[in-house]
Length: 267
Ligand SMILES: Nc1ncnc2c1ncn2[C@@H]1O[C@H](COP(=O)(O)OP(=O)(O)OP(=O)(O)O)[C@@H](O)[C@H]1O
Image: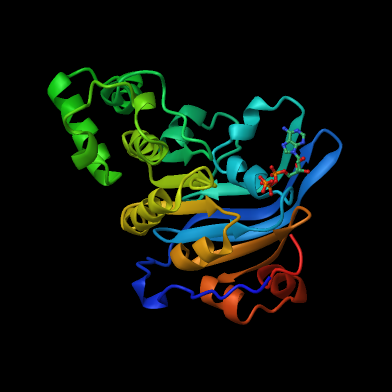
């Protein structure tokens, strides 16, 4: 397979140059299985960072360490340091609910609650104590606008969120994440279950989202990584083999293994 990739225009980046997440000497274990090996990475604010690599190389595991989703896995163990705006997110007494509010997540398969579109978006703000209906109305509208789906659903806010198309459901899930006022959006293959038109819409949206949010995305689609990300990390067997500007990764990678992967020689 030969892949022609056009990396995005580097000037389109609105990087502040500030580090949002700093990852130092990170190891991650599922029981005895060493899933992430000595990862070091700075994830910059307000850009899109993509994780690519063959199946099972640790991309999702790493993504989930960034908002402590793995806390739910009893036999998982994390060593090393992950700091968000300079604060160790694994330190004792770190408020995990606050972390998940700041670091939202969108999954591979759209997973709206079996509730109305309105209630899906208002859910987070309500659980964080917002009760005023005018304020909730405003958050719902702003979040749906932020996820580029307001015009499509404004007349059916009380319809079940599961009764709309998959692409629309995924944008509802993005709006639901936005409603919590996050600083970072983690996206785990957010378009892999979607048709090309919906995928296009989500990609355009991601380009807009980075104006306000730091976006980290796992994708199997290398063209997608090249189109939408500013930086790309290539993972293999739990290690980061290469992490650089997306343009460099796809045009002049330094490691032969990265070159082999992006040119379709394995994975
Ligand atoms: N809950 C778990 N318990 C035990 N092992 C797991 C668990 N989740 C993932 N793994 C293993 O950890 C390794 C990394 O998995 P991970 O899902 O992070 O890879 P990935 O690169 O995201 O893969 P894919 O692209 O297929 O989603 C794999 O070998 C996987 O089988």
